[in-house]
Image (cartoon, rainbow, N blue to C red):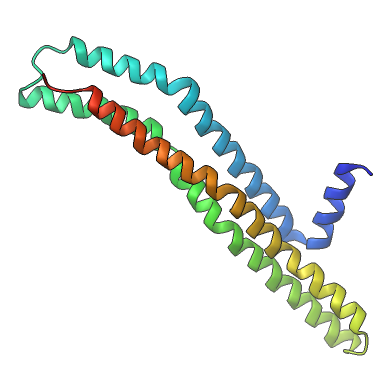
Length: 170
């Protein structure tokens, strides 16, 4: 069977909110990939440049030297923390979007029941079943994103410690 056809059928079954969950999922994993790219490809050069700059600094023990050290660390800190909070926020939003999809799906089920009556339990079961797809999708994607977010935050903490310990005041 065609994978895109299966995906499209799943998205149509879950309603409009499922398309929103798909868009948020795409954004989430693009941001996760971007952070890994930064930590593995760009950060080593940034760290090396800041450590070289620190090693070439003249007076490291003075107030100005300490401020320069803080500036170098802060520059890398700003680059490392970029998008980490957004990743966490998207992970937290996904289950809520799933619940939104369930609520809107149930409203549609109740509208159908009000129009046709409650004499057809099979139609009601199908509606309730499709209303729960967004919750499942939101929870699954959030659960898939949590380990990446946790590991990226741990990597951030390790790299901050590594950078700060590399800039000692001998």
